[in-house]
Image 1 (cartoon, helix red, strand yellow):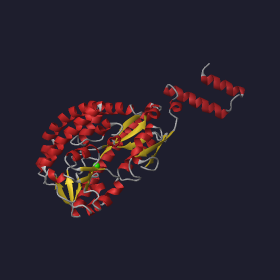
Image 2 (cartoon, helix red, strand yellow):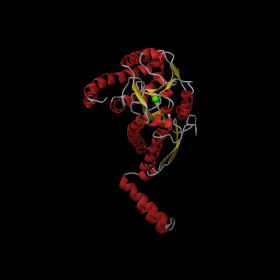
Image 3 (cartoon, protein in one colour):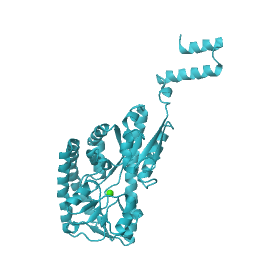
Image 4 (cartoon, protein in one colour):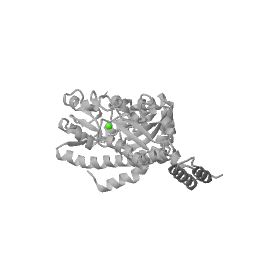
Length: 373
Ligand code: CA
């Protein structure tokens, strides 16, 4: 006997009520239309937490986390809600990776180089000195095999990675003395994290690490001689132009830093295929939004900084060349210390070895043609 006949028979016998019969018949028809019962399979709801590395309400970066959550909720018709917690609200900012691994939150946000202590190869998925710019890095991740290596690395930590934005090429930092030769780096105390900091040390400087909240005071008091941060937009909001005279370019140490989201793999694997696809789509949309916001806001902010009298300086060619040579040495040390970094570097380098010459005959020629000063 078909389901429908059974329902009519039960209704005639009075063993089920009319509303129940209608609901049962509607469900039966839905199942026939869809070749199954999709409404039942996908009706599961999820309430997830995201712990971030950024201060609460931090412009662009925290905004990107909230955009991701909003997109997922809208695309899933409310089946998946993600509440975003700023750094320190649920877990310390630099503990996001560990917190999500341990299941203290289902998702996290940050940048790969923050987890270099546990996953050295993660640095390639953020940025390495003299690496790839934002477009090249995104191309390597999406189309050049980077994503597969990234997923494989994070799976070792019980996580699934997603692209979450890019800062674009950063600025070289704020100084109160001019850098005219590599000798000027000697003994200079600079806040410059990650591999860039190791290169700076190899060049004779001193790498200092401290939270962003302490930078202004420490630069003002001379506890540090220089600092880098992000780009004109965020640097303006930190007020560095009030206490440092020279603003250097380029950000050789962070040519295009990718931001990331990551999910607890066990929790992610429980999601239906449509929710996984929604998360992927929301990640790409957020990545593009965040990257374009950096581009737009930095473009506007640099005009404002110049109007405020900031003196723009460029690292001399021989200083840049020295940093570049030292970067090769630092990267060689890294690949020798960590086998997975060696594997990722091989893919990264093979992409870069073609991307840079390509940019030299396309973008670089275009910029030369504009005769920018
Ligand atoms: Ca930076």
